[in-house]
Length: 109
Image 1: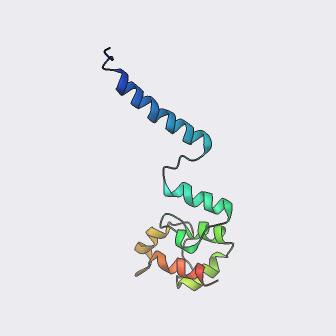
Image 2: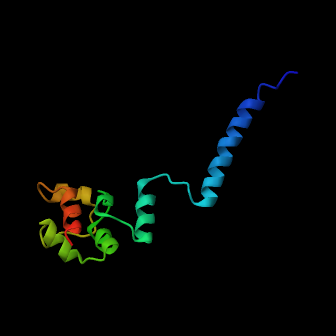
Image 3: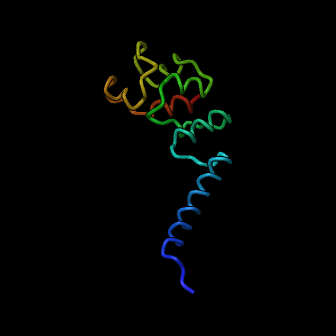
C-alpha cells in the first residue's frame, strides 16, 4: 500500500492548526508577556517583579492601588514627570533611571 506524498504534511499542519484553535478557545494561547501581565493584574496577583519597561507609571499605580505621587517620591523621580511615558522611555528623560527603581518603590509599600 502506498500513501500519497501529501498526506503526512497535510496531517502535520492540521494537527498544529487544531492545537492553536483549541488553545485559543480555552484561553491558553498567549503570544506576549503583556497578556500574562494583564491576566495577573485582573487576578490581583501582580508582583513588583512583573513590572516591565513597556508599562507606564499610571499603569503601575493602577495595578498596585497606589498614587502616582507616592511611586514618584519613593522612586526618586522628578515631581513633574509625565506618568503616561513607558518606563523604558524614562531613561531618556531622567538621567540614571532604571525600571528597578519603580519595582523597589512598589515593593516598599
